[in-house]
Image (cartoon, rainbow, N blue to C red):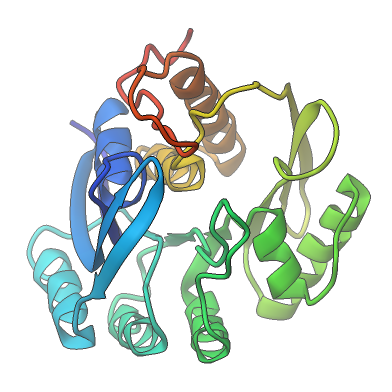
Length: 264
């Protein structure tokens, strides 16, 4: 077992996304997953029917309890729930500036519904000072950049702007929402620019792809991979998890297979 990953995120009772997907992903790569749960949801493949956020103090206490004893090689941040929790997480992470953070900015549901308030957006900005790698999808990048993005070129330009404005080391702009037959993801740093392309898969088994990819990258980084190789391995893993998905659920947000054979 190699690579300690602390995951700060919400719970998905259906097991396809959130903390459940994160733990399964880190375990599939042979890492050690720890958690600070921010919210509990009642959801299945049809959607979310209820959500309860934990208190900001409880979220902060979970983070401190883990880091002050076990420690972490990297922290993965997912859904935080509300502005108060975001503030608490940011304040708590100030105590551990040496630990890199992979942040998946969970702002928009698959349906297109916004999952973050205006107050939450402002509070979320504070987290950027802890961010080593940001992994926004296209709708999230539109929120962060404040403009509509229709092409890979526009997505790349917006990602560059966000990275520079927020002083983030790396950003992975995910283009799965772009029109066309390909999934185009773009990884950027100050000196590097890499494009990843794959043919889109026609399937309903894509619930939790964002959580899963960010956690896969996080555990690879925790194990010593370069950012480029961590992204490549993470993308390959998510693709296999989709292709090997179990026949579970009757709704449109169906789960992947986190225990897939990673090489296909």
